[in-house]
Image (cartoon, rainbow, N blue to C red; front, side):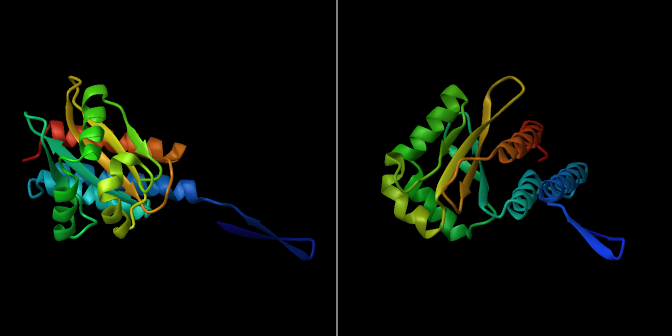
Length: 192
């Protein structure tokens, strides 16, 4: 934001970084869109979550988001991964599911209901067998967040892959916490 003010024959220019304010506004707008979609009978759960994830990826362009649902046998299935083409998701799933990394991330998220953050997938031993595939997609960091029901059961996992090696920032953690709350409500009170 730039403000210019004339003062005694000169010009005073004030430049203020309003990035955080704009991100907050975009998050609020997205949350209101999701709220509107939930009250419309023409949208299914997947449509709403796809819209949410696309919005998050627009606000935070470094992120690629997905939601994995869990069934009664604790096997996982992609509910939403709108950024990657379907054939890449299938290839990625085929190479990940059943690997040490998937089992490790899933077990940590399921058993301890804790967040998993890997700031560099290229050197993490759990990602060794599909490191090349992740890197070919340009994904260098991985975060996994359990989505728990109001009764404390894990309903799904919100996953974020980043296009750079990094830990989530304080502001990203706050935004992700809000996203997880929205996802919990959407999944627990399934729109379908």
